[in-house]
Image 1 (cartoon, rainbow, N blue to C red):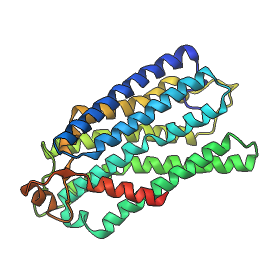
Image 2 (spheres, rainbow, N blue to C red; image 1 turned 90 degrees about the vertical axis):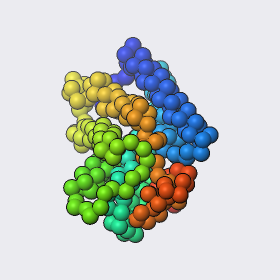
Image 3 (cartoon, one colour; image 1 turned 120 degrees about the horizontal axis):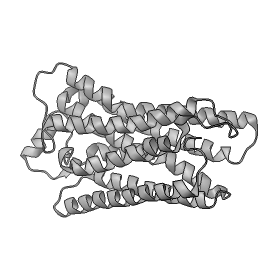
Image 4 (cartoon, rainbow, N blue to C red; image 1 turned 30 degrees about the vertical axis):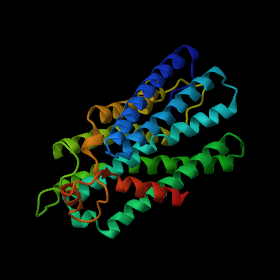
Length: 301
């Protein structure tokens, strides 16, 4: 098990530190969202990152409660579910921003119906896979049948692999979009230099993918019996680095670099040229892809 057997002397203080960091990070993004809302600058992703931090506040609180009461199976189930589910918000945010970069660099291709449909399918698959992994995780706590546990583990491995692929997707999308020849300059959206947007997105995606890949890789390795010494990749340090630390870095990176200004698009942007056209007429900024992702994911549940 990643992180080994929890210890009150070690895990509770460390988890409490991360709890405080998530509280501060969530407060920062909520404040950014509310301040922007007052001046008519609508950027839903700041709210989504706040929700992610809120989910992680619940996760760390449940982890502390589970360590304090290790025999409480309900707490253990809830903690396991929240650990698996929360990070998906950042994966979806990065994926949507990569779509904005693609549409900026290659408007006709990026806005094509087939490409938009592929992104919608990805959101539906994310929602369905999340439902699958939650069901498998909960069921493993209540069954001793070897066949059922094997199926549940296979479902967890599928979900971990799928989510790792999703976390990685923005990198090839952005790099291929940059490498592909284009006839015109990128359509401008948001504030700041375009290359800075690219670096922010690539760094954030790499951190998310690093954590997802490590968790996925260790889950594929055959579990080690508790009577044997835990390998280094199951250590507490690895758990806190690849689960919570990479997420905290992304949360604060996006706050410090003001993604709310850099990645916003004008309200009503739809089709090639709409980013710049809407900016010229002075429309308030919105989050078209974010709304589409929300609606599509809801349909898939």
